[in-house]
Length: 149
Image (cartoon, rainbow, N blue to C red; front, side, top):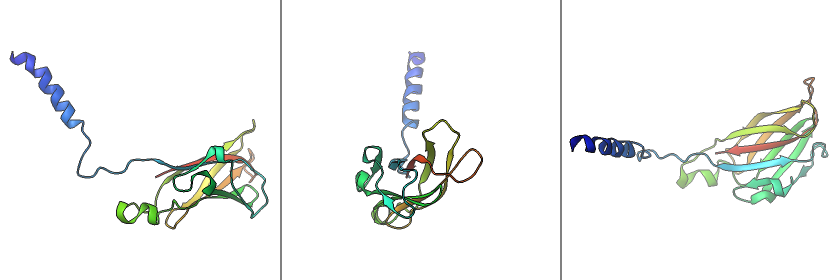
């Protein structure tokens, strides 16, 4: 009888130990925004709203996202209202932060894009992106970008 209870005891112990901790539950990661920057050669300095079908923002949904081409191959993506300000501070205790991924989109060449920096401490979350051709020179390119908190 004692041998029959041993597997049950072990299973119960595993079930208890597998429970998430209660001292600091954390918040986990969640997608806070993504965008397909679909206009590689938009006018320099002019913001555009990327394809709303492939764009998301926790607060304002797709229409709150914008992309500005600041120079050849250089872009700023802004997610309005989802910075480290009121949404992720105060009662929630979340501060500025996040993690950003970017990938060049389309074509058969070896263009690539990199995240230069991001800012999340204000009301908006903004990301600076640079795209390059295979020779390493800045070049206009479409790209996908996602960020999580």
